[in-house]
Image (cartoon, rainbow, N blue to C red; front, side, top):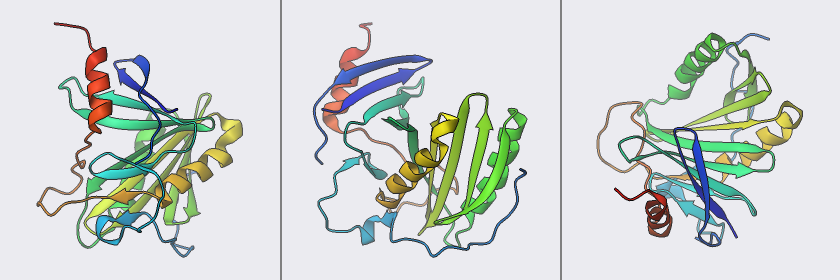
Length: 212
């Protein structure tokens, strides 16, 4: 059975709702041939791979993983985190220019922000090009990004340093098997694509909120 939780301002609650069916930063060249995924909705494979439909992203959820939903104060969904034994994985999709290249820009900004927080940041050549790793206290972070047709998918995994390689592999596997649903509506570059929870999960979370 999969567990779903609600995270808001540091509060986490887990609720059972059933099994899921449905050194310094350096610019590195793209050195590895990209794998098939992640997929645009138009090219989504007709397979039986279990993916959770979050509206803008269909995310594969590993067996035994839990989900934690992060809400904005406004009540909208900010992120859905996949909690695995090797770390917390988060995937988000954004509007991007037709010309691509947004992830390379974001990498530099992420590196600067992480260093400002006191992290040690390194750049790596990965499956889709540049990846970032960061060490911050007792936490190891890995960032992966993919430029798609008018969208960019960004994934991050946070876990213990001793599992950094395993965590990075788990992140890539989720990214590789995800499907991005961009939609046709025009929107500014870098706009987060809307996350919509499946009805059963949304109702379950609503039931956990205190009565007015």
